Length: 326
Image (cartoon, rainbow, N blue to C red; front, side, top):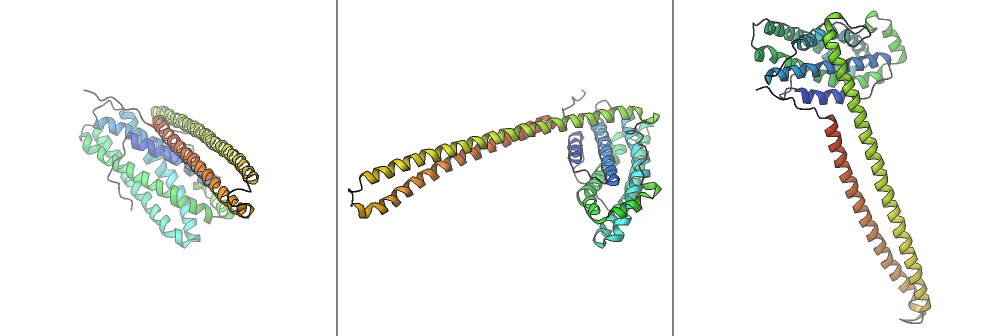
């Protein structure tokens, strides 16, 4: 059974979780692609929920509708359609792969636990809104609920979904698609037609999704810019290396000519081969020393570029602080 992490997710940390999940590989299999997409929807709503929980704790204005509707959606849509669809896939995969059986069995049991925890969280929020419970007691369970969901989805996407994709054959997927429950149901928040009770939540959720796409695009451009700058650094290093090689080769030719002209000196013709070896070795050492300096400068430039890129990505993806009420 999943146990909550000690650190509760705030609006900043859950935003990072959302971006991490958005950045993961999406399956080409239609069923798994739907499950991945629904995870993205769920993580978006959990970020909105985190915003409201933070607002409560910091005595800021709270959108009670978003808080309630997020939990209501989670307990009435994923619990009713998303998790049962996963259970069908898990059952099929577990029958085919004994190594996968324990993992999917655990995830199926966690689905039951998540459903109970979500229902309890929703009841506590309803009691808080009715004035029967203080906010800190009523919303504590919502933090736990968020943490459990995140850990559960993280295990599914990082460990189990990739294994399932390897285990199930096209024939297995075709057999699963005959199950009525496996077919996706129109999402009441993210689908083409928004349910009346979720209109307020849908506006905020879709805005958050657009913001995530914009951030991802900016991060992509920052990464592309950094890649191009890296190419420039490397190209400059190669050009400097070629220049150094040409200079050293030219110098070597000149020095070889001088040795031939003065072959009668410093031991005569018999010493000429040894003088060639000594001179070539000395020139090679100088060349390698120059190349070492170029490599060191290149590594330093790339390291500085990497630090700058990380800073720019951090700036793009950081969540703005909300001013506290006084």
